[in-house]
Length: 110
Image 1 (tube, helix red, strand yellow):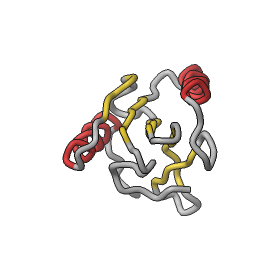
Image 2 (cartoon, helix red, strand yellow; image 1 turned 180 degrees about the vertical axis):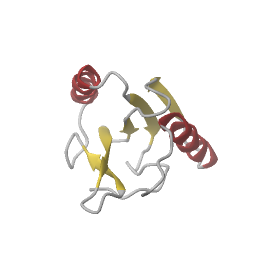
Image 3 (cartoon, helix red, strand yellow; image 1 turned 120 degrees about the horizontal axis):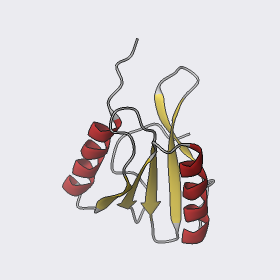
Image 4 (cartoon, one colour; image 1 turned 90 degrees about the horizontal axis):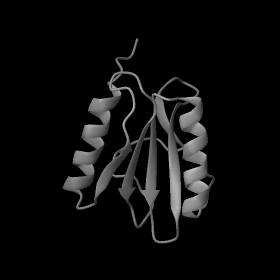
């Protein structure tokens, strides 16, 4: 069985990696520090992409482009986040400046 990192620790790590990479990051919404899910908002030149934390077919951690393959306007991203928070009140929302729409952390993108 694979050990899982607590959500609050993972968020701290991702913010630190963004800082080391010279990019800003911020917690937009705090979720459950132990087992909350995570949404990452990437703010790029052409719009925003929201990544949702998921598991791949083998059960490994991965990220899904929840708002689709192309960047969306802020209102579309906000509406998606709002719907997800209503479904899961333990959800974290973290935003990163990412002009190239690449997250500041390593992870498999689906």
